[in-house]
Amino acid sequence: MQMGRAGCIVQNMSFRFYNKCSLRQRIIIFLLNFDYLYSFSVIKSPSPSGEKPGIKNDIMANKIEVGSKALDFSLPDQRGRRVNLSDFLGKSSVVLYFYPKDESYGCTKEACSFRDNYEVFKEAGAVVIGISSDDIASHQAFAANHKLPFLLLSDKDKTVINNYGIGKSLGVLPGRVTFVIDKLGIVRMMFSSQLSFEKHVTEAIETLKKMD
Image 1 (tube, rainbow, N blue to C red):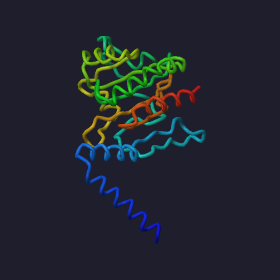
Image 2: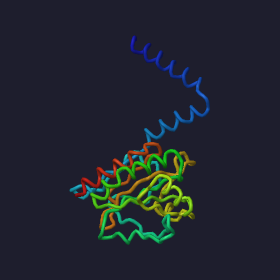
Image 3: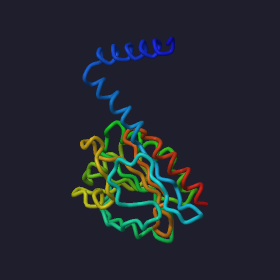
Image 4: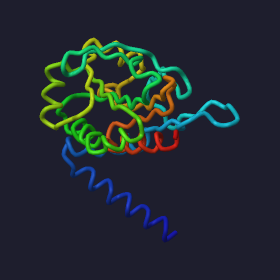
């Protein structure tokens, strides 16, 4: 009974705190809880028994699965040069991350985390490629402002974004999803989280280490 009363007191305190929050604060609280519950990571590699990898808390409409062939694409980078995924086949692994928007808080944190770990990716034999629907000029400024050493590709009409099944969180926020693709073009990891910006980097590094 005492535990029950304590639980009620804590619950009532939580409700009182929530009721005092502004609309902006309530939205932030909701998003944090939503992201905690529904961010997901796909098991990094096919199991030895040949069973298909599983997905935890999949809220995205992903069409790409771990163990499947990554879809090729051709998009312009921040300098206007055409980049194809197939350019890297047989040469290096690819960390392909989709993000919502240049210069937004979360996307800047994520990009800078990839930048700060760029040498780690190079040592692991991987290239980093970011994709969003921003135009080339936006990517060029974003890369220059934050000294980003990796490729940023412009998918203005969202063809590649849609082909990779990058959905929207809450039906509003553009998805934030990272894939690790090996030298054979096989997807080895898929991680989705709207608010765990830097975890996209740590998950990718962890996967690359296990691939060696």
